[in-house]
Image 1 (cartoon, helix red, strand yellow):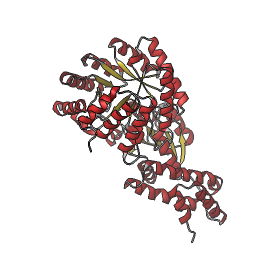
Image 2: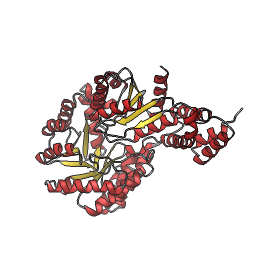
Image 3: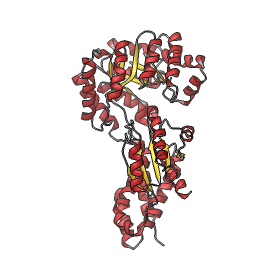
Image 4: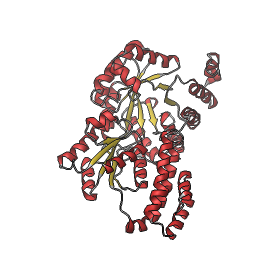
Length: 210
Length: 264
């Protein structure tokens, strides 16, 4: 029985060095990268999500652990490529006219630390650019962010662009950002909405299972 | 200068008061901010994506008719501003213009026509820069352009764009460095910022907001968009202004003391 406690704790504490040393040691013992990621990293992120929702952990702590995970995943990449599939492909970006990227970056980091392949298009992204990237990478999910009430319309237009290209059925579109509400998401026919970054991971997991 | 932030539609309780046109409750909040020491009252209807124009006009008209304080019209939407500006009585402020091409072009004529004060965001079409030097460069260009267009320096309030320290460790330092550069090179213009962004994602947000306010004042920010009914925050503002020599004979500090602002 492989013991994942050490790497799990290193992720909880955001200790990059110990997490990477431990991941290396496990890999040398012949533990598959997929197991290290699932039992060491993703399970720790799950616990962090629970503690965050309970108000016991705060945003900087979540980011710290997500960065630790990203470091380990980067290190395990060569091994992962040969043995494990990505859990899914996500296109993410902030919609046209909106330069805010902090929340979007956090969601991107959390999704990649949960085993998804994430293509981050940055901020101020055209509807056409979202469509192009979704086609190029054969995306499962497109995640749209907006922080301004004035750019909420561009979310709607981005979704319309997918419909216009006949792609609306093959791609799930999810939305988030301070001015976005569940009602607004329903109004513009998005497939999902989350209030915060960890909720976005749950949402993506659910959509990928469904 | 204190700009009272409470009448903002992104707060759910305010949104529903505006939706229900509950004049009495909205005016009570306006008056409580005036009584607490607000110099301007910020009015925001941005959460009404479809009918911001009508909502902001109604809110401005309602508050202006009953409250004798200048208003700060909070919208990037030139149509909403154009409809609301004629309804504001007395001095008025626009929150906000920026170096974004379209926004600058649409809002500048309104500021000139109504002789408003202007909150000017240090961002352009490209991005909100992460370095103080780059943010200063946008603020400097914006200041030069506004001065050349005929806006008085005393009417310009540069906003260095606060970002949360929870996600960007240097978020506060970038603000302080940007403001020092702006104040050194353009001593006649003002700097303004909001407070609540700085503490996003952290517990005890009011504590962070308060210490940030004190440090921001020391760096040269002279105006704040905040909740003036937070007595500890206002106490911090008054004391910090006295500490940097912006309170002759400590008169405002002493007045606040006698008024009980610092009482526990």
